[in-house]
Length: 165
Image (cartoon, rainbow, N blue to C red; front, side, top):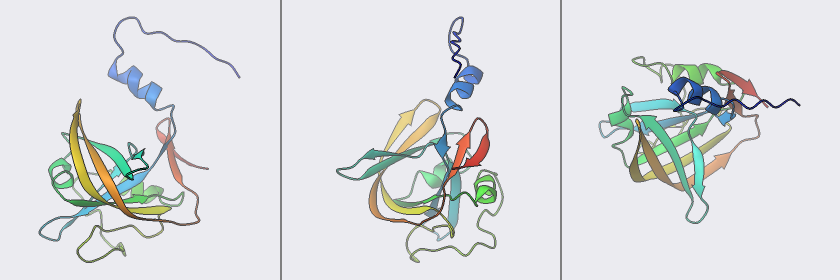
C-alpha cells in the first residue's frame, strides 16, 4: 500500500474537498415523501447516516438550491429506501431534476405514509425531528419509527461512480 500526503497551499477548494470526500465510500439512498396534496417526491442521497441509537435517529442533507428542497424539508414524514446493488438506474433517476421520478414504479407503503422503492436493501420510515443549517445544505434529522432489511447487496458510491460489495 502506498501513501502520499498532499497538502493544499491555502484554503481547501471545493474541488479538492469533493475529491477527498469522494474517497469515502457511501451508501446510496432515495429519500421519499408524500406531500399534503398526495404527490410523491424523492431524491437520491449519499449523505444519509445513523445519528443515534437511543432514541433511533438518522440524518441526511439536501442542497438548499436543489429544486426539490422545499418539498423535501416541509413534511412531517419521510421514507428512506437504501438501494441495492441492482438499483443504479433508480439512483440516477432520482438524482435527475424535473422528471417524473416515480413513473412506472410499483411503490410500497401505506396510502398516508411515505413511499418505498421495490427491490431496496432496506426501508426506514421516519418523522422529521429537526432541520439544521449546514453551509449550503439543510440537515434533516429524523426519528425512526419502522425499519426493514432485505437480504440483498447494497449499492455504494465511491470516487464518482457506483459500485457494489
